[in-house]
Length: 258
Image (cartoon, rainbow, N blue to C red; front, side, top):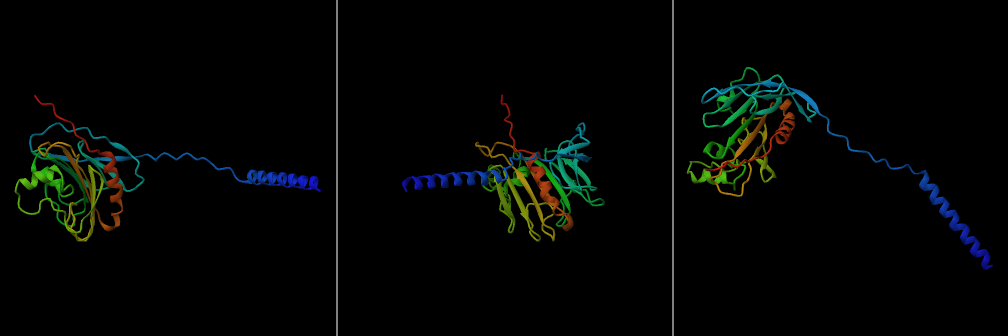
């Protein structure tokens, strides 16, 4: 009787082992797929005329095409060789290099005013990129509302300018992606940081401002993007913002003294 029980047990274990092996063999093997690399496309570059506030330096080189990982269609690059930005295809553009060193490039529908040389009104449809520096008040004012605890904000507040120069606009939504990068969104009706904001159109964009560890007197380069598009093109702003964020980086190069 005992031999019979032992033999039966061994037979049962053998059958169970074979059954498990058969089940495992019948299961499909997991496929180890490699992540596909981002798709890279090439877009045309529209050259923008530049007005200079002081002198007429040689025009920088402007590439005819530039690569991008954006899959968004109906956009082109616009550039004056100093500033470059994505914007809807078929639009006009102009740029300004001010006498004090500030720069801006605006892209807008054909037939609209030259927004690079004048303040865009509420509801203006445009993509605008600015390059400034915090060593003077216009540059500090450009970014101090998005970086209220920064050296730029201290500089503007200490200058005694009237009004809430560095107070966040009511209704504006901001997200600090890194200590040096803030994105903003101005819903319809909110007059905020975005050029053209304050009308029925929403506006969004981003600012880059390197946060140095030393005092308010240090001047650093800053950059700002604003995207205010008609409702049927507003979805392009996300791709325009994304390209701006990866094409530009917060940077600071110390100047040698003496």
